Amino acid sequence: MIVEDDLDLLHGLRFLLQAYHCRICPLSDADEILKTVSLLQPDLILLDIKLDHGNGLDVCRELKTSYLKETPVYIMSGLPDVEEKAYHAGADYFLAKPFDSETLLAKIKTLENSSFENFNS
Image (cartoon, rainbow, N blue to C red; front, top):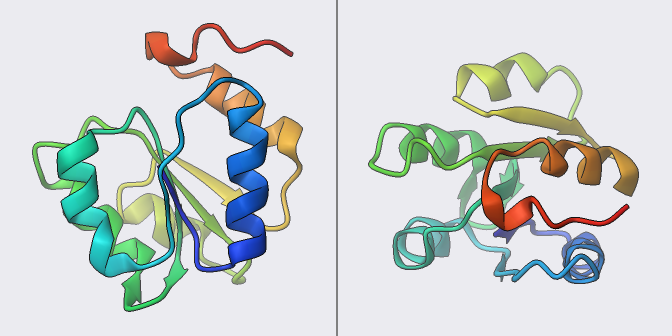
């Protein structure tokens, strides 16, 4: 699942990850996240901090205190000095924007989830 309010970045990440045969659920609104996560139970959530109708840090805290706490959450942000806040909110990884696709793909490859084991470089 990709949660990003910048539609250009959202579509770029979607295109990148679909090229690696990932099924993608793109969202841009914080109001939709918790309901959609409960329904789909994604293998990974790429979550921006600044969202329409919410804050990614708050969403991460909610996810990490729910039955979905084992779902990896990678927080993305171009804001300065938020990496520590992201980890404090429960993020499994922090991506500082802008980041390159190789960094993201390498981090995804490290997931132990079998649905990502077939990535090709």
